[in-house]
Length: 148
Image 1 (cartoon, rainbow, N blue to C red):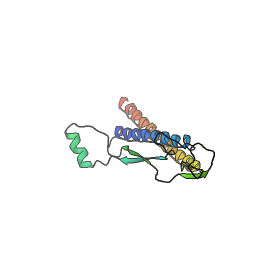
Image 2 (cartoon, helix red, strand yellow):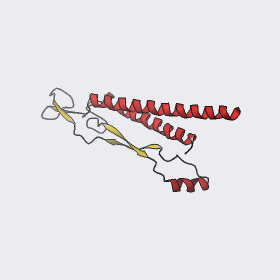
Image 3 (spheres, helix red, strand yellow):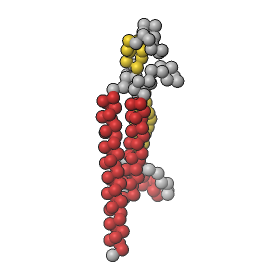
Image 4 (cartoon, rainbow, N blue to C red):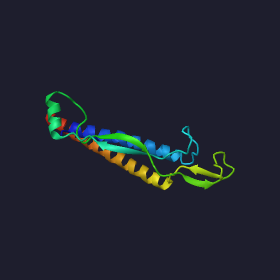
């Protein structure tokens, strides 16, 4: 692995964490949404990450053929899944989305958990940005050494 591979890996992680933050923000924004286009309450969504698990042999084979792709260890989003937790039922008989018994289905979203997830995502983003900065600094120092 060279310095440019580390930049690509950190860059893929930055992109994945940005998308994770967007999903978390959407969850928080829809915490009180009782009616969606699908008909029920909003469902909390979660991001599923996946590492590009290319082996050293397959990478070496790809390099000999001139095929370039993401380096092993790159982060991808394999999907965004709905949380299977059932909605929270609240007794509000005057609500337009109330069922026959007067209960309204609200999303099972805990704002505290969402904030913890968001803080984790932001911290991971910061760490990957620091890794990109360190790799850029090493590349610049290498260029400076070669010039002298």
